Amino acid sequence: MPKWTRTYVRLIETVSYRVGRFAMYLLFVMMAILLWSSITKVIRLPAIWTLEMAQFTLVAYYLLGAPYTFQLGTNVRMDLLYARMTAKTQALWDAFTIFALIFYLGVMLYGAWGSTIYSIETGERAPTGWRPYLWPIKVIICVSFVLMILQSTVHLIRDIAVLRDKEF
Image (cartoon, rainbow, N blue to C red; front, side, top):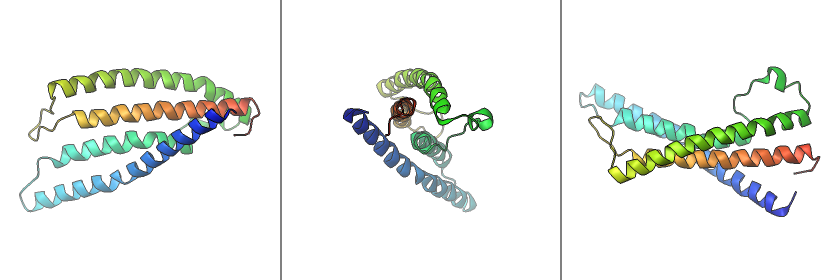
């Protein structure tokens, strides 16, 4: 494989790894928010921001962790037939399906990008009592889609290397 390909793969996998490891700790942030919510309800001074903030944290946790999960190969897969395939057949099947994934993620990014721009331009806020701005979570969604597309291209490069009998 060309040197630029190896550099690209290392760069994207490093970014996916670091963002994914950061995202793991968002679970503890969400637990702290929900604990605070429980405490404030017990003392009869409920915080109006806790439920939405926990939801935003969960979205960030889930979406920012997706490229890392994909990198590690711990994503959900139907192994009924896949596990019985040879390494080359698996790589061929993955190379075929990765294009569908990239297309899907591209459509999702297109929609998320338009929604994010609209949110920033209009100062869009959630229609709740707390009324937080929505653009920060929408930016995180766009970033996570970009990272997932980049990680998908890395997966495709690795599959092509397997199909060509090249060591990566």
